[in-house]
Amino acid sequence: MSKGKKVVIGAAVLVLVALVSGLTTMAVTNYGSRNDPLVTLSYLNDTLAPQLEAKFNEALEKKVSEMTGEFQKIADAAGGGATGSSQPSGFTVVTLKNGQTVTCGVGTEIMLRLGTAVSAGSDTPRLIDETGGRSVTDAGAALTVNHMYMVTIKGNGIKATRDNTKILICGDYTIG
Image (cartoon, rainbow, N blue to C red):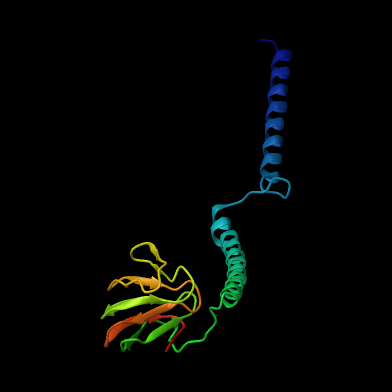
């Protein structure tokens, strides 16, 4: 091989090395720039995820608060406002005499534990039998012991048909 060819090949190799080196340098220095961002897993886990979670929780709390207010307006319009002597934090044991009537607000739950009782009220359905999955539509229909009943219309409730009738009740009610 002649000296001229060696020089040309050497120069070509030198130009090729310079070109590859220049392209590599350009790629390394621009990787992760504003034009080509690099996002790491630690950024996603430590920064972005907590920010998104905080924004989501804030929006969720706002919507829950709005919905609670709307549900309260609906319950108040339906007559479910506080009118009774119950303890809204849980169930209360109430003992009734024969003939006593329990008149309830919307959403009140009643469970007959001992004795006998019938449905009472002027609007149908009188009660919802949550345990049996049915509506109690007839006034004077006998209640089943240990079934959970819910009042869905203000003014409906139950009437004891035996002394010493015991019920568990949660919600607004009055005894008459």
